[in-house]
Image (cartoon, rainbow over all chains, first blue to last red; front, top):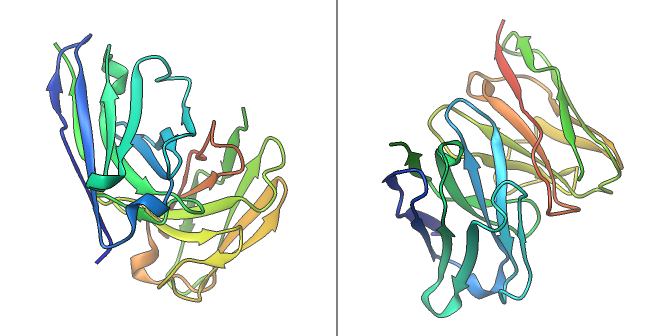
Length: 116
Length: 107
């Protein structure tokens, strides 16, 4: 079945780095735009980044621009989010989502906690 | 930047009643508007895309309408499983995204 599975979350100190991964299965990954979305504890959804099917078009929210890098490996059916210079306010559950029109398939999320 | 707002913040409804949720964009997003349902501890679920098209498997009691800057999600007869938080999201411009959400709770 169509599935997205995130991994790579954890506890990191302010200023540190993490790389999140999202493994896709059950569909032709290379056909779809993909997104990362996050949700801070008790808060709403925040769109983080978006990448086109080929990887040629990328957008970032202002809150992460210059610190986060989205990428994909279509041969490995995988989406990535490299997160550098992490701050306390980056603490959240991070979701990857398939994005053909809105976001129609979501992973279960991976938790990132930035704390000293 | 397109700013999304939703009203009300909380909607208290009895089971079987109709619920009407509103979403407004600060500038036109055409019909590039989606609605999501999120329950505690779960990932969001796509309900509506293109402002009015139900996603696969979504019951007919969910309907969306609107275009431009004003949008509505209607749940015709609330079931127990519909009590959740609902978010709208514009995807006309990928540089911004979600509204703050409307919590639908039991009256």
